[in-house]
Image (cartoon, rainbow, N blue to C red; front, side, top):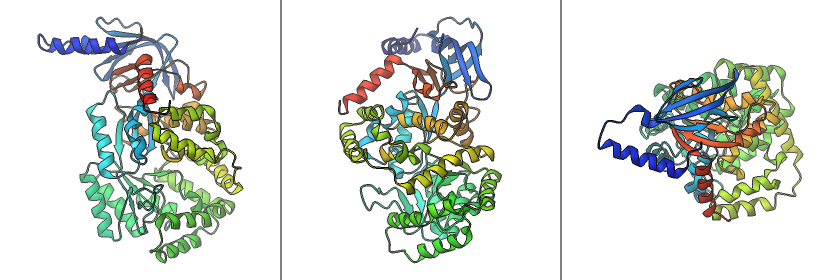
Length: 487
């Protein structure tokens, strides 16, 4: 039997009253999901078991568990999996959407997120809000502002280029920037594209001294192998990998370094765009097999993870703005944002795909298989809400694109959004799988996602930190989001 919001509220009220009259017993905090099939991305399906949740932990998994005084959910015909992660989001990128972001993740079964760039005061508020209501918001990991060299890319020079970076000019400034971010409570550091090799090394070395990982984009002044050898933990969007695979990679990196040094008075965003235009496709069209192998071998050797954001990269090919069902996700955005997004995508629906974009999109799709061949771990991330990617909904789309265009199996795609992010943050003993003793961040599905990855959308209930958001509660939350939107 599903739990209604009213029944949950009454249960909480009874529990609070009991505090004043006697000690609380364990059974008053338990939830039993009976006769459910557990999704194990390595072993497959564990069918028809009972899962007992006590407080915010999975207490026991077994057959025909007999427990009294529990809230029971009938899991017959349903599938239970670990809660999802979106490993690349920007909570503060679009102010019009900020108020709805955390709820959008919860209704889509995303119980943890990794924010990869924002002003520290803003992203800290999201992290604090999430920690204050752990049952009703996703877990939030933050990087704070991008640490970039001159001229920094995200400098606030236009509405589409918000000020979400921190510029450093010297090794001392780079070290201090990392120290300051650590003091502010970040969970990782994000290094960006205009850093020199010296500045990048200072960022990575200082972060490692604090026990933090460094993610980001390969600086345009460096080769992938150099950044990986220094200790870069992960790379977002596969950004600039192709440049180190090119036949003339060594010559080209020196050219880029000189161009950046001579363009300090340029806008960073414009300079980066010019360099991408000059080097990206030319690199792909001149990939040297030996250089490609050296890059992938270096990533594997240094355990440098990848967050491909493949749905974002393939947007021009897949044109989600032409998909009526995707456009309906805008209904859950605040009205001002939905209007802006509709207007922004209207003129894009009839545009043909630029052949130059096709070169990069084809290469990016093929790289997912190469990561698998070289045992390079992948995490699923979306970059939402950038480029009209609706938070929450976009993670399911990313998983589908990884399967359809990256040739992952459904199990591999699910692993990239459950097991792998937990490993990345050294939380494998807490999250990522449905096992006894782990935190009860769970997703109850009506259909088997191992058969069809689209079934991750068939959400019957979201369990966050042991609290059950059943289908009725999720629908209520969706309607609340819609009430702020265009509908």
